Length: 70
Image (cartoon, rainbow, N blue to C red):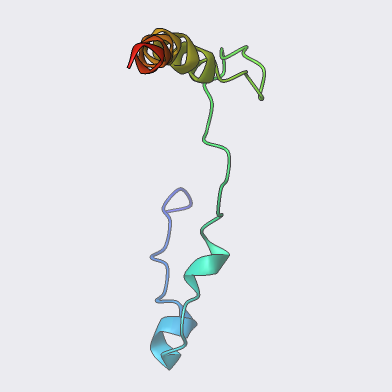
């Protein structure tokens, strides 16, 4: 039948026993795939640094005040 596909033969590299390098298929630190409707900038600012600083600042202030009293 013209619409039927024939079976793909086994790759010749598997028959010959050649080594497959994983580095050809894996990219280090590649950007993750994004949804089509994701309109954010690629380099969005990391706001967690500021949130962490705001959360730690009162604790540092209290420790500094107590160290002056002692």
